[in-house]
Amino acid sequence: MEKIKVTATMKSPFIKVGYMTLDALLAALKFDELQNVEQAHQSIPIKQTKGLFHASAAFFEPIDKGKEVFIAALHPEHTIDPHLILKNKKGQIHRKFDNSFTNVLNTYPKITASHITWYAEGDADEIKKLLYPVHFIGKRRASGFGEVEEWNIEANELDGILGNFGEPLRPIPIDLYNGDKSYPVTDAAWRPAYWNILNRTACYAPSE
Amino acid sequence: MNVLDLFNQSMGCHLVEQTANVVDNAQRALSSGHTMLKGGNPQRISSGWAIVQPQRTTMQFKLAAKGIIYSEITRYEAFQELLHNWNGTPSILIVFDKKPVPVTNLFITYDVRCVRVCSPKGVETFDYTQEPQRDGCMTHKVLFKQRGKYV
Image 1 (cartoon, rainbow over the protein chains, first blue to last red):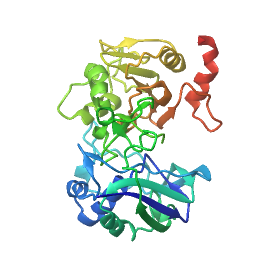
Image 2: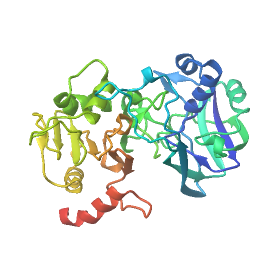
Image 3: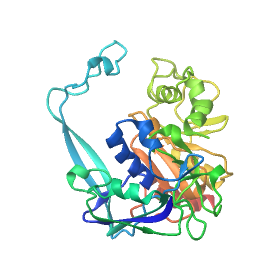
Image 4: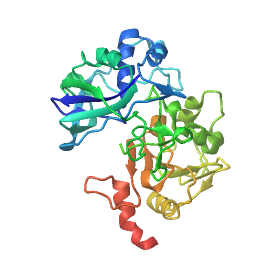
């Protein structure tokens, strides 16, 4: 396991929700390969301490910050098995829309930056194998956001948990934190799956 | 402490029967109908605010449920009072609207420098000790304007 700095040179603005930690990115890539959540999380090539991955959040210097709005035209018909859909009190499926298309507005935070950087401690060769074929990161990739021009992995002295001044580089539960305690405590997911509300606890974390 | 444990133990338990599924318990409390103090058909909590703290929940929408403190002050007055006199008690600040608040939008506030206001539309995060920025969130701007009354 080596201490590394991972840099993505960006070709297009990206849409970031949450801390976008390196282990989250690798977990998603592993899931694409294995199609099993547990196996994907266990095979992330990054050092762990009591379940905490030594992988930082995404850091960048924004050139511009804005919002990107997408209008999705949704067809009102259910395309999945009706037995899987929540029923109303009468035991029927909720049918909210008429038979025309319905427009749904989705707003995403858009960031323009030349580079995104992560710090981590892990298997550099395995991380290279996973990241180098990746051309898009973040949300709305199919719409052209988060295009990566180049990946670069180099040796570094940070372990992906604490910065040079003892500041948190990622969400760290308070009982696992040995850094500067003057930073505010926040409610955050500290391990993958980051979308899972059950993985949230009181953490020291960098500002989102 | 997980946000669902705090929510269910302090608020959800007064509204719905608790099962082993903590996500479902919170979801049911936020999206199902509850008996109102004024009577009539059960209604979903569709307006007002709530502040959920360990063993103590204060809310505006008047339900028949006991164990909850009901208050008539506005959301901004309630949040201002809590944050101005902040004592470090973990708190969930919720704003209700017609759409139910998704459980994924529930966050605990542990520090006034990272306040989370949870609503159906999303989560507002701000530093109460700082002046809001031009593109800052509405709650922060309103609370900052009101602060003169509390200083």
